[in-house]
Length: 128
Image (cartoon, rainbow, N blue to C red; front, side, top):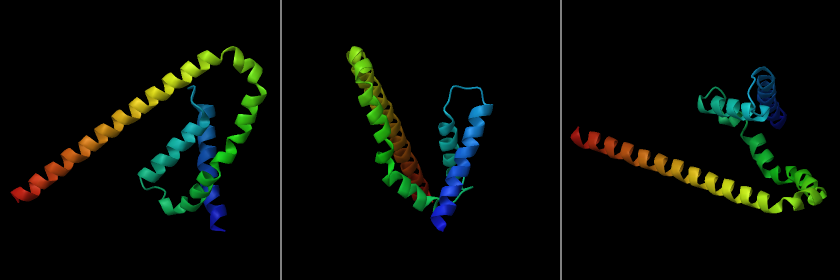
């Protein structure tokens, strides 16, 4: 029964995201609004993680199944894709590298900030 409750919470937040997608005139998918709302609710502790943890783990476990229809769609569109395959490969390679670069830079900054904060806390404790 707790799975149904947890799925209900996730679906409710997704519904609010869909409603925001209809109201806000930006070219952002409604699912992104839902993800941001769920993230903020968890970060601000408005929604305890335990309230959605089990359902979230289940959804992550079955996520590969969700890509099967998209893969089949790509296979059935091979004739259209083949004409521009080189362009699609270049776009995929460049965007992947940019995402990896951005993620690496953000991670490095977060790690440096954490180290600086630990040093500052250590110097405060030594001074006391």
